[in-house]
Length: 171
Image 1 (spheres, helix red, strand yellow):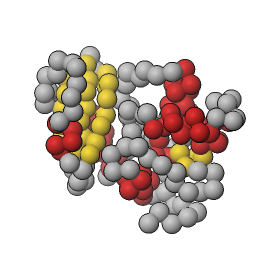
Image 2: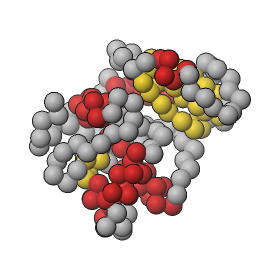
Image 3: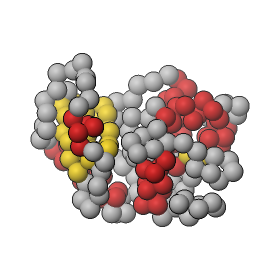
């Protein structure tokens, strides 16, 4: 397993990627670099590994945060329950700058009464913003939660970066 920690141009977040064989296994981010470095992992990791794949991930994140990239093209290794995998797949279909409610995602995956379970699956997404869980909001237009680094503040920043115009104020 390889690891690289980097900062995206003009953004105060640090990103950490875990990857192997040109596949992403984890994408984490934080405003504090130490949060990413202090994680205890039971894997042998080659730190700050340099590779074409790591550079491509960094380039795509740079392009996304400068609004030049609308959809990531990074192969990922995804694990989870059958339900979570369906939610991740459906979230990946939400277009840049658009949102769907937890309920709409539940209906799309043919589990119409599972909006709360959709929210729980969103919380376990290891690939934000590639799998855009930040684009899933409450039915009433409220943002709902965000379990990624920085919480709801980060969700607001990600949506604002995409030019999302909410029905309710983000700030």
